[in-house]
Image (tube, rainbow, N blue to C red; front, side):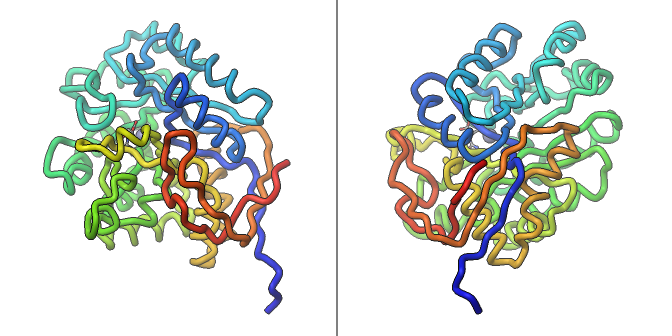
Length: 337
Ligand code: NCD
Ligand code: ZN
C-alpha cells in the first residue's frame, strides 16, 4: 500500500443546522464556518428571538459583515410563532424555513410553542406558501425518551399537511431514522456528535460538560442506526452540525448550558468517520447533495480538499471549547478553492 495520504474533494459542503449567536461570540465562530462550508442554515434562537423582518434583516447584515469575502451563503430561519399569512409572505424571500421549538425544551426556547394544536393555522399557511417547517422534536418527558415521545406529533403533522416539508432536526434515535421511510414529506438533519458519541461518553465516567447537548446523546443502537443511514447517504438525511457555542464559564459550571461546539472540526471529523467506514464516496451526498435536493437550493461553488493528515484540535477558539479539544483528528482540510 502506498503511504500517500488518502484524499477526498467535497464540492460546496453545507451545514444545515448551525448556531452563530451575535456580537463577540458571532465574531469568534462565524469565520470558522464560513472558512470551510459553502453555506449553513442559521438558527433563530437568539435573545430576543429572530421573529420579525427587522430582526431578521439586521441579523443577516451582521452575519454578512463577519463572513466578509468568504464564499458562504447564510440560509436564514425565523423563530416559529403564530404568524399571519402576510407576515409569512414577507419572510418568504429571506428565509429557508421556520424553526419550531416546543416551549422550554432547549437553549433560548422559552418563547416557543406551548400548545401545537393552537398554531396549526400558521402551519397551514406555511404549507400553502411552501415554507419548510424545521422542528426541534422533543417533549418534556423523561430525557432519554423525549424524541421518541415527539414522533407521533411528526406523524400527525405529516398526515395533516402532506405538502409541507417537515425537517426533524438533529435526530438521535433509531425510531426517528425509521420514520424517514414512512412519510414522503419528512426529512431530517443529523449532527456529527450523535454519529460518534452515546450517553456513556457524556456521563458514563467523569461528566463531560462539552459533550452535553439537547437532544442528549442516546444508546449505542441509536448511534448505530444514525451512522448506518449517514454513511449510506440516506437521501432524506442531511448533515447539520447543531454547532452550538457557549462560553467556557457557561459550560464548566454548576448548571451547564446545552450545546456542543463542532463547527471548526466538523468536516475533518466527518472525513475521518466516513473513511473509517469505507464510505468516503458518500460524503458528498451527505454534506451537500442531499440538502440541495431536499431544499431545492444551489449553494455557491466551493471545493474543499480533505486529506488523511492529522490535525490537532486547539484547546479553545476564543472562550469556547470545541469537541475533541486537544485531541488529534486523523484528517484535515488541506486546500480550499
Ligand atoms: C442549542 C443552543 O445552544 O442554541 N443547544 C443544543 O444543545 N443543541 C439549541 C438546540 O439546537 O437545541
Ligand atoms: Zn440547534
